[in-house]
Image 1 (cartoon, rainbow, N blue to C red):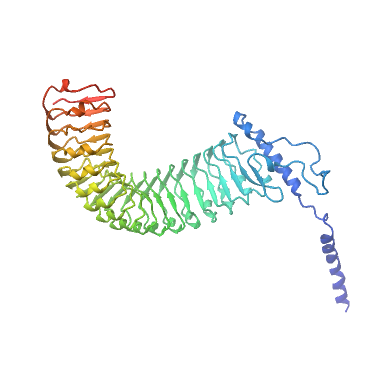
Image 2 (cartoon, helix red, strand yellow):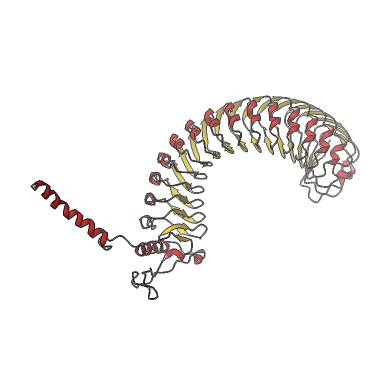
Length: 516
């Protein structure tokens, strides 16, 4: 009985403490919204005082604080209100209790550093946009104190130094944009801790080293941009874990090795930019799984082997750039399935055999470049189906036969390059129908006969080369009156007449060569 009574008596002080805590609002002194707001205002003004003065800052209306008691009550109300608040300042937004939750200071003309920015003074900051200013020096590690931050945009400044590893403590971050700065060093592995990230952009810096494998932890990522750096080593296979990825840009680096086959796991991918690296080996057949792809750019690498036929599965593709590699074999006929294709660039490879006739199925194509390969055989007549074509480059191959008459259907054609082939026969007079043509390259072939009389009928031709052929007869009159010409080469043919007298006035002519 005694022990029970003692236990009850010992418990009474705790009951008293709880009672006092609940009944007295002043028992524990939490920071008021007013004092937090005042602290944030002071922190912003202190940071502003560190800026380099310039005219653009006149639009940044952050006012000096009054010296009176900020906890004084408003005479027109019984509720205490802060007498000063940054919530109405330029680029500042606050939450429901008057604490700064958003700073949007993009394009405010700020020139300075973040050294005087008191990160600890903004416990409720969720959104920070300082892009398109002239901020320089390092990104301070204290940025990790912004524990509620979900949006961080520091692009297009002059930040230098390393990305602080402490950035990996911002576990709520969904958007991280550090592109277009002067950041260097390795991408910190701690960035793999940001598992809420949806958008990560580190492009156009001087970052080096490898892409950290734990980038594969960022399973919510939609956009990953690391282009235009000095990154090296392999593309980590863990990148295949990023199944929510829509855009992947690793262009203009020094990445080497193979394209990992499990890149085929990224079934939501719409853009894949791996151009201008040192990637080698085959284009993995798994790339045919990426049926949402709109842009595929693998140019300027050392890729070899054949173009995988299942590239024809990518029926949403608008752009296919495989130029400047070491690809060989045939152009797969399945490429004719890509009916949404607008730009097809396969130049500067070792592709051989014929141009597949079903290339004429690409009815939306604007640009078709197959230059500098080992293609042979005829130019397929089906090429006349490509009525949206503006740029057609088939030069520097081993094509033979004549120019198909169907070429006259290409009414939008502006650039037509057939130079350095083995084409023969007359230049078809139907070429006169190409009224938008500005650049016509027919040199170093075996064309014979006369030049078409109205080859410059529309008067838009600026660059015309037909040198090193077997052309004969007089210079056509339409060419004499083609005042748009900038460059003309008809040399090493068998033209007749007094060529020097046949030409009219060419006010724009920069270069001419008509010697026999």
